[in-house]
Length: 385
Image (cartoon, rainbow, N blue to C red; front, side, top):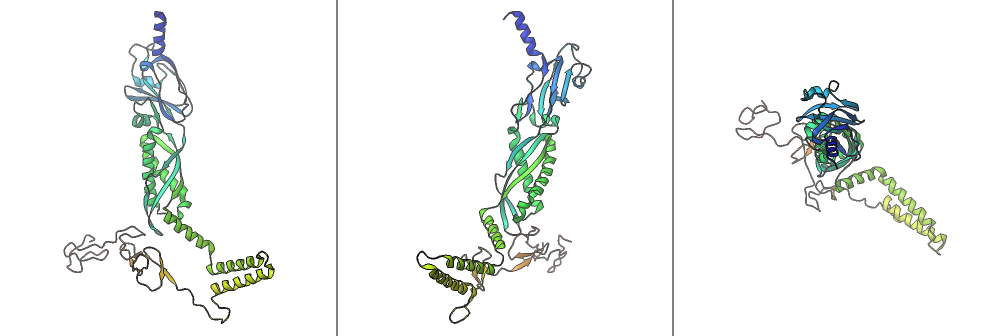
């Protein structure tokens, strides 16, 4: 290479004439254009495509933001030049500036999920643990703020670089939204859209400080522990059966029909009918409580009561559970704040969440009634006064 070719090559490396960026990664948020020595030739063409923005940074400060279009970087008609100050050598000299292309399109199908279960107080099941996951769409709403607050001087910034921080913020807002909405565990599946809209509103308040916006937020699933899911399934099954007595009679009738239709191999139709009638009599005795011979009413099954601690059925009237030894009779007391009926010994109200510990007189330690302004024992003024 001759000396003239070398000088020409160095000039081409220093003076950029076309500044543009084609994104092929589908995950890049910010790309710093590789300007040699940060020198841009006077008259250079800047091409900003749809869903892009070009941010010029001069001496560490954002000088200008260019929206989609074609621009000629020259003195007099480019806003950036007035912000960068007068050129030292006139309009034939290059300017020094960093150029960041910001991808303003929507980044869809970004995943989120709770890495640890979230504790929730539920009216039906007490304290339950919830896990959830879903997806959201994100875009850069303010390129200048995003470059200043998040990107910094990174030459390449993708969704992977910020996804962890976004997930932590989303999980925090999800926990707050679930607590504020107070949706019972049985009704969560029907409230996914309401939960998603509330979370998106909270998130965008925080993300505005980063120049970001969540355009869509989806809650795909909220799961409960297996024991709670089993209880929900049992309740749904009982609701589907409806009248248990009628259901059992229907089952007995089906069994009688099937037995009558079964010829029992070579036993013949008569034997099949006999077996069917015998089974029918057994079903009638079991569910009707009447003996075929004497017509005496069979004793009904003793009523049972579930244990309030473990749920084990126990005979009515017993004082302690035969399985866990827990007390069967649980007294009910009103909440000190809202008056809701609570189990005796409950530390918090399942309706309003208030602590059930009664206030005490600061002088004599006498337990005070809710809202009492003076101690009935010693007359000391209370904090509620």
